[in-house]
Image 1 (cartoon, rainbow, N blue to C red):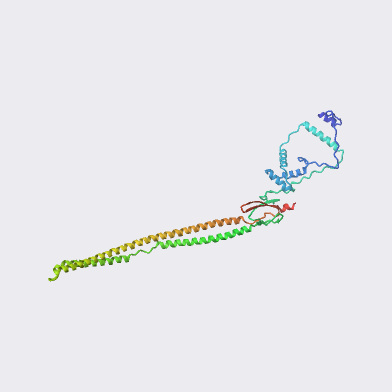
Image 2: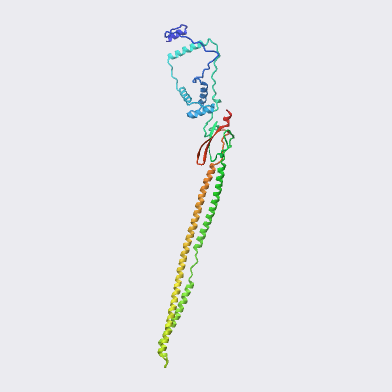
Length: 400
């Protein structure tokens, strides 16, 4: 094979498998063929070269989605996952060490190249212009294009903003509006007014409950101070009545004793000529009356003593009732205080919830200036609506 190649190069037309080797005519000079750069081929090589230039400056740890977003940010159009996979394979093949070609293949390739050069040298045609390859330094590559926000300080081209409103009137922008950075997108004024009124009512209710709890505490302290010093019990009147009844009973007893002594002395003191029996009967009647008075006097003493005991028992019962009433009032005041404090705590918890809702209902402002491309209503949960705003950032809108 090498001998035939040498004879063909020296001008001798060798036989190649029984056929002569024919050289094709050169290409039309009016249609110069632009050759792609090494490693890039195909009908869309300019686009492929542009994508390869963007991928060449990308960090090695990015995923397929991040690389595709990077190409979309830099060139304005996304690329396919297949092209990214092809670029990765070529980069791995370039990074791997080249293998030595067989000597026969090298000789054949050399012969074909010499033949092509000799055929093309006879026709004068303009030199092909190299394919325009964008410089990596001239390509603007964004850090990220995700709705979460730009990284590295750059602004995204497109931004999706998801908002939660209670009424469609809370949304202050519409599709086609131009917004500046910091402009209000959602203010939720109706819901904020309702929550502000509820907050004022809760604060007034909580203040009134705390004042009532303070009064209940003062009542509790007053009950404890007055109930601890009860007036001392005095039974002087009852004791005096008992003493007087005892004195009267003693006097009546002495009269009865004198009458008995008189009856005993009648036989010796009644003069002659008087009816002793009649006088003795009369004196015995007087003795009987004196004994009755004595029994009545001692009955009065017993009654006075019974009244004294009744007075003491009544005072003891009054003291008991006083203690029970004091305990009841104390328990009522303490329970009222606890109820008021518990109600104030509940109102405080509700107030904290309202404050949290007001904090969540803060005005939402645009992070970047740009144009609202689309407003899409997503869903409704109870009385809350979810809406998505698609914002084209001003820098990206200017490049269109």
